[in-house]
Length: 496
Image (cartoon, rainbow, N blue to C red; front, side, top):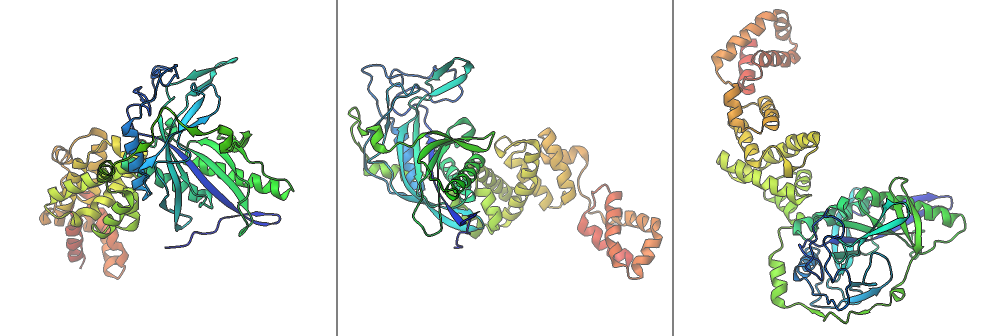
């Protein structure tokens, strides 16, 4: 395992090291909220998904959603973390307009998930980032400030939505490592199905903790940039905040422990409020909720429900299917891509009548090079691909059995993208089948040689590089339908 490369900020007084920890808030995949039956569907009209519990009506008691607990436990297991069979909910007390209860139900002292880790690749190296804990908590509502110049409006649709707060250890040392960590975490959550990872919709966001120090010295004072909702913005916030702190320290100042906001338009952070400590929130056990006790049977059911995770899948692709490390990494980065590839692979093996190991490389190369290139051009993903895995496998089979050349295969693929038709139908209707008819190919070669007698003489005089010219002219004359292997063999014979 390679050591992490060194990332340093060069200041007037020497090098500074950046220390980064992330608190990722991931919305739990559940149709109902953490303590009520209200819907969690995104995009509803304001205040249309609010129960009496969410609105904190007097006398309303929370009822824990078992599915949210299950998803948090499965996430902890996927991260190789300690699962705490006994945990407890606490009240975090503070007043804000979007928090109707005047407190948030969270887990400070006894979280449901303890320590785990994630292995990342960044800055050309592999590194393990520790997970401190995962606790379940309820989200607050949302304030909207752009509806009226003199008022702020409150939307409680998000109030009570279940969140997993995944707290890393301060193990990251560069923006690139932080970006790799969030991407890997998002991938695992999506594989498990415990969070959809849609950062643009706010279902996954991060509080970014940054401090700087001279290498080898104790940790410095950290700041926390709240609710950063994209990997690019997380990296930009770290870059800006680290440089800001270095400038302050080298100017003789000191860092204030505070909460800050990242402005993506300006690419900078700005002060929001002084950073509170736990005692400022007056945490105490929630009197309306009993401690949460998980049975061995429940834990076993959670473990049995886990899918093959990205690291294990990547290793299998390399070892069992013989794929390159790069291809395996690309194909396993997102659960949807892996599912599409495996559907393609199964169909390709079936149509070719061969084991998956014999068609895996061709399938992987086509998916990554051809399909991904086309989808990128069209602004689409594999989930809404105009070509299905079965159609892709049929195209690979037609190329594999010689019906199509590589060039014709690309031509057919473009027609598939435009029309959605099956490749065999396109080949039949448009007469695109590759020809291996030696008589027909020899006749074309004779015409090409007759039209280029001077080049034939040059080739026979030793100018071997002209062979490619004759191949190109022959294929052009045959509209790309000549079998390249047969064309090459017959040209060599004809040219002597």
